[in-house]
Length: 125
Figure 1: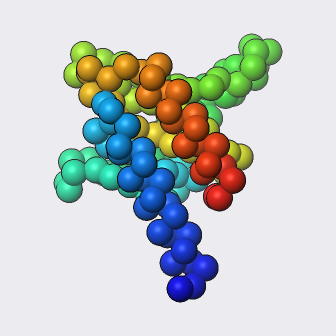
Figure 2: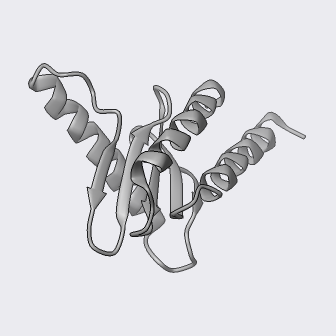
């Protein structure tokens, strides 16, 4: 097995772990500049590369707003609507995790589990 194949399998393992969290209906791992690394989305549901890029933009914008306001960087960006939520958070210096949560998801419980997964991702990616 080559190093590249090992990394791809590790990313897929993280995606599976994220999808096992109760309330998660879709997710991506992306670089901090929005390049898609891994995904779990229903086929044809959404432009996944666009979702990854927009998630990176949301996180970077929130971090910039915090910086110019002289406050700590955000731990997460949570966008909520009546039918779903989008949670975006850092998974290390170069990676982010973004997920779509169903309306019944306990966002704080999801975030707590994601924090552990993100720490593992940060070590690998």
